[in-house]
Image (cartoon, rainbow, N blue to C red; front, side, top):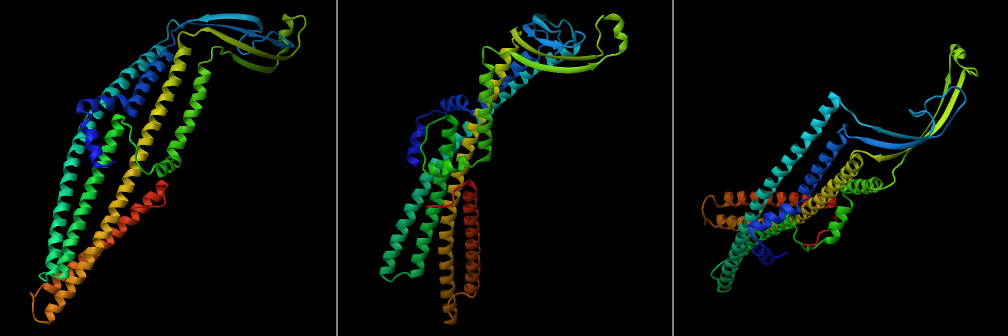
Length: 396
C-alpha cells in the first residue's frame, strides 16, 4: 500500500467511525461475547433445581432373582420425572456459576475500552507517519539538489570526487530514512485496517499463505474447530436417545433360599436401557449453546491468529528491506571512510592538513566497519526470521 493510498484511507474514515468499526470487528471481542454466552449456558447447566422428565425402556434377562440393571428393574416402559428441592451445595454451585456471567461481562466491557484506546493511538500514529514520510521525501529531494550542484562543481574542478561521494552518501542516508518512515506508515496503516475490518490487498500473498499453512497454532485451531462443529451438529439433533447396556453376575448366600421356591445361588443378568428425554429444564438447549459459544471462541481465536501471522510476516519483510538498505549505506560509508583516510595520509606525507586528521579518519573507518558488521548481522537475522516463517527468498 502506498502512502497516498494510506492517506486517502485515513481521510475516508473518522476517528469515531474507526473506533466503532474496530469494536464491531474485533475477534477478541467476538471471543469474549462467546465467553458470555458460554457462562450463561454453564449457569443453566449448573442449575440442579430445574425439572426434568424422560421415558425409557429396559429390556433384560435374568437367571435368578429380579435384579436392577443400569439402576432400573427390567421393564417394558418407564416414565420418570424429578426435581431437586433442596441442596445447599447445589445452591452454592448455582450462585457461583451465575457470578461468572458478571465477571465475563466486565472483561468484555474493559476490553472494549482498551480497543478504543488502541485505535486512538494507532490512528494518531498513522497521521504522524504520513507527515514524517512526506518530510523524509522532501529531505531526499533536497539532498538530490545538493548532490547535483556538487556534481556540477566537480565538472568545473572546484570540488573533489570525495565531496561528490559524500553528497551521494547523504542521498542514500536520506532514502534509507524515507524507506523507514514509509514502512512504518504502511505497517501502521495495515494494523489500523485490520482493526477496523477494511479490505486490503497486499503483495506477497503466496508467502503469507505458506506461512499460515505452516503455523502450528492455526493447524491446532483448525482441527479443534472441525471437531467442535461435529459436536455442535450432534447437539442440534432432535432425536437424542441415550442407550446403554450392562451385564453382571452375582453369587448369592444360601439364606435367600428360605424366601424363594426356585432359588439359584448363581444370579446372572443382562439388560439394556434406552432413555429418551421429554424435557430437560433447559439443559439440552444450554448444552447446545455452550458448544456454539466454544466454537465461536475458536473461530475468533483463529481470525486473530491469522491477523497476527500476517502482521509478523509483513514486519519481517519490512525488517529485511531495512536491513538491505542499512547494509548498502554502511558499505558506502566504509568506502568513503577508507578514501578519506587515504587522502588524510597523503596530506600528512606532504606536511599539510591538521595533526589529528589521520587518527580521526582511522576512527571514522573503524566506526564504518562496525556499522557494516552490524548491518550484516541485522540482515542475517532478518533472513533467518523469514525462513522460520516459511519464506526462503527475498526480492528487494
